Image (cartoon, rainbow, N blue to C red):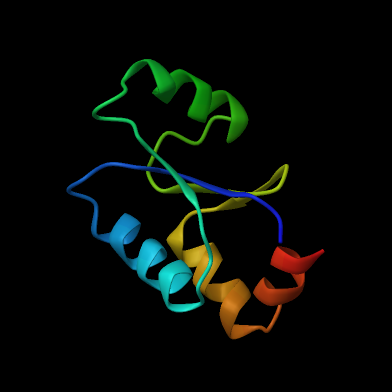
Length: 85
């Protein structure tokens, strides 16, 4: 399974929704709290091609986007193959 990284903040409902989906699938992920680690926000923005909102989700080297995009991948049946590839 590819490594999953998710940039979050503690008060973000979309972050919690994305983490619930990943936890429900038993997917381990590395969480970077950009409020607790503000120096990592610039890293997130660069990796996300300018994306400034959280969550920003990466599967392997691929930028998935945010919670809406993650849930869309799940609904379309494309999340599991992406995780396994």
